[in-house]
Amino acid sequence: MISIIIPSYNEEGNVEHTAEVVIGIMEKNDIPFELVFINDGSSDSTWDRLEEMAQRDERIVAVNFSRNFGKESAIFAGLETASGDAVVLMDCDLQHPPETIVEMYKIWKNNDVDVVEGRKADRGKEGKAYRGFSLLFYKLIHKASGLDMNAASDFKLLDRKAVDALLRMPERLTFFRAMSSWVGFKTEKVYFEVAEREVGESKWTTKQLIKFAINNITSFTSAPMQIVTVCGVITFIISLVMGISTIVQKIIGESEGGFPTVIILQMLTSSIIMFSLGIIGFYISKIYEEIKNRPRYIIRDIVRKHDRRDK
Image (cartoon, rainbow, N blue to C red):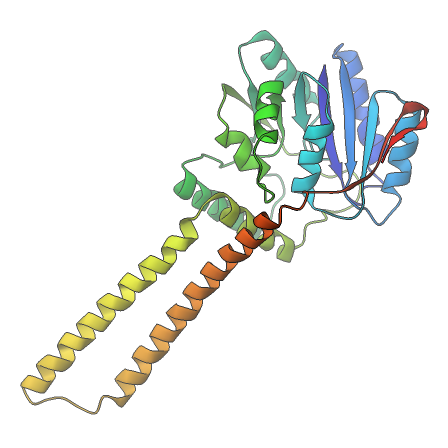
């Protein structure tokens, strides 16, 4: 059996249709399955609809967070709730085509493969700025960690061995897309066309995407810390060159008043120091979040058929 995890945030217009489409495809291809919907603190009627769906169909499990904890937390809640021999993660808006799950399932079942990774054959209708930002983000991750994440997505199938390996990782600040590649295991790739959303609009704002990128880069690699060292080296070289130049001018009697030079050097040095402290402070804040050891999420309800609840 496979467990299909579907994080949902303010998706009242999508959850029922998504369940119908996925169930129809699984039944048509005779694939045993369960659907695990995670309601990530939605402010609309998403949870009410998920609760009704779970009570009607024993193959649907609905998990309700106490508040919004974010997609990464929803993913790991789904991994911990899922009971399948393999797990598939997909978006609720059907931009990850459910038909590809069948291809993933066949590759996993008929081959010695632990992870089947969905890769985007194209990026769909994205703006140039968003596309450029995404490419830069994945390039930075690749340079820092060596993981090739260009065209990667959260849409993938994981064998139970890979799921258990992920759940043993204790960090609070997670980046599923990178962590699922980092754990290794034998991996195959399938390519899919990104579909358009059928209902509603993306819940991601530009500010949220930037925050998401920064958090994931700093949680998965310490590369930004090296910027501090690079800035220090550059400042040292500039200071050395300007110092030698000042000494030479003094010796040959052509030195001029150094007040502007001193101000420029002081401003440059101060800017680099403040920038460096900002990077260090950001990492210290991450350490602070980790050592508090709070749970990644809090579950208010888990609903299955016959109104069986765990709180």
